[in-house]
Length: 343
Ligand code: AMP
Ligand code: GLY
Image (cartoon, rainbow, N blue to C red; front, side):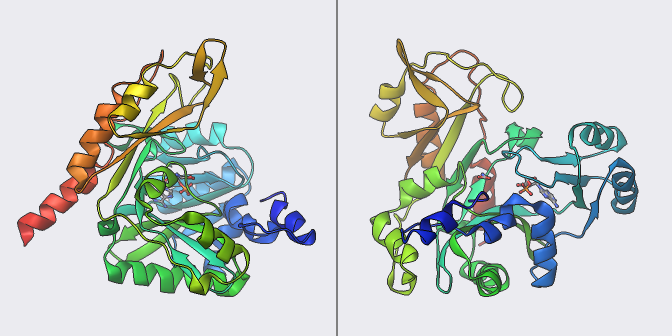
């Protein structure tokens, strides 16, 4: 999309769901996105754009710790470092090259809010929550996403409306945005703020979304491509769904591929859907071929049961070096339990 695939399809009169090259800059360049948020009065973290390490050190002094450093361009989910002290900031500056966004660290609940847009109308998908850090308890470096869950209860109706009114509609109005608009949100004490935009469905958010989607996706996609999204609808299953990502040893650093995978059939026999990401057909069956290898996804009437089902299925699967987080959906569950105790 950043290279212009949507523009090329349209120039040939073909249907496609996605943003044009110009709008894809909202994901392709963090600097472009931040400038757009400010121009369009979309709430986001305070930031400074810096051209080199010296500029970055000044900005870090201004914000204090923790501080967030972001590489400008596409980085497969690995261009963001949260530095907790000067040593971590220096280590980040040694790896993140070129222009950077340095920004204030926000706290709150993180939510992935994804909407299908046709340049005028908007069809929001149910909210999801990703787990970006590699280890349990949000420890370790950021990844593309180690697991996600989808549940309408992640946001109240008022919170969803606020994100639509303050983030999604202003973007569609300002850019005539088409395709999936993914707003990575932090629900802060001062209201929802944008962490980032992606111009596509998220990975692994899409796996639990697909698991909960009760209606046929294709008519909604065709309506979006034809600019008549106003007439489209999506139905969702009532209960939540959970996706646990099984990753290769070493990921998000360097990892090896070509490890044979066993247990895929037994995982599915337990009622899970196993989405393939980094796999390929090897000489002796399916083997690993990427950092994030599989997304083991299951649903239930309640979050605790859905988590249990996803993990039971994940434990059937084996490959050398395999690792995964053990706490996908757990924070959500604690939040729900607290709410229930309070009422
Ligand atoms: P991004 O690619 O900008 O979404 O950053 C990746 C991840 O880093 C986010 O999903 C957050 O978990 C975290 N992050 C990014 N920006 C901030 C911020 N300003 N404050 C706190 N966490 C952040
Ligand atoms: N899960 C975040 C992303 O797809 O970028």
